[in-house]
Amino acid sequence: MKAGETYGFWPGRYPAIVRGYDAGARMCRVEIPGLTDGGDVLPLAEIEYSLGDKSRTGENATEVEITAGDTVWVAFIGGDARYPIITGYRNPQAGNSTGWRRWHHANMELLADALMNLIAQGDVLIKSGSHVTVQAPSATVQADDTHVTGNLTVDGAIVGKGGLAVSGGSGVSVEGNIGVQGNIDASGAIMDGGGNSNHHSH
Image (cartoon, rainbow, N blue to C red; front, side, top):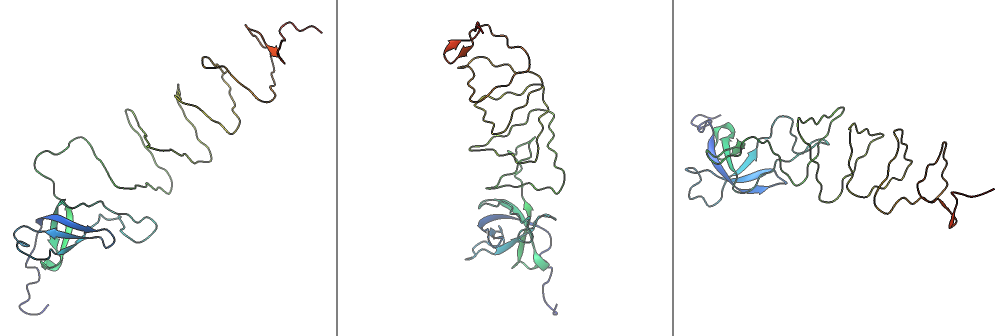
């Protein structure tokens, strides 16, 4: 630093407003009241991400959602007012939501090398506007009751150890052989090629 330079002349943080966002460059045009008043071109500000959030490098690159009009806090790199850096969001002092922690973005991904837990003391809702896919070598559902409100299609075998009860609808249709070990108790007719086989004589 040369003699007479004003390095560190602008310490601390200052309220600012995002007026434009370049997603590819991770830069914002910011208005800083009292500093940029009357300026033809608003300064470009870098964005300080949290430790561990990588904007570009590695397989787990991420982006923080920023929109025009966001109120933020800025500091100046080296105290130089030409180089602002956004250090965080600036909350309003009234009308804030309470009791919720929310994230919003166009796309989201959660990655874990080993275990991921989602635990709630109340209900859990998973809602999709199109389709939900679960991919795993195996899956276990531990529940006293499981209710499916729509159709159910199974490409593999169904194995039941606790019995099977079917009621309502249009009955049961089976294409293929049926093997039964044990008695068959029918309160109605059992049809064999259109004939009643309940009283078939040999």
